[in-house]
Length: 219
Image (tube, rainbow, N blue to C red):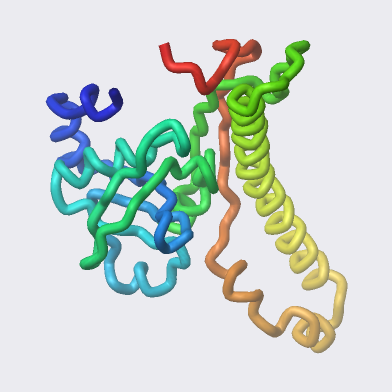
């Protein structure tokens, strides 16, 4: 169904040729990791220092496969095979690991992000009693998806708080401590993982009410 929707769309070519960089997130079943795809390759100096695996989308066909793979619900849909760096692996929805993949865009210089979420903050309660495996599995996936999303957004918020705290602490120490004592405490560089980090202004756009009774029902 998803494949049929994007196969002949002109938007696919516009997306591939766009100067605006697009990142697509999938989960590689064979390598067991989250991978990202973009129609613009990383320069060598950036590729060497980023922990995120970003593959270059070198054709419209690969772009279509990545879009299908990133929309692929496990169990309900077969994995999508995508070739990268000489390997052809199977890929599923990146939402298995990340719903709001903020890290990859932050690693590539984003300072402000608008995250569009299609559900309210709270999980929708239900009075249904579950006894069959299929409904239990669907409910479990829905709850897991909500939890992953909240954790993604929470990590960005906590990182911003940590960076602001460290900056304030260092500034006050510089003002009130003798120079020798300040150098003894702050003379060493921050850990490499924090040196590359900067505050990310995240605006979350989401509805106040649930848009559907079941987020895994496609009609």
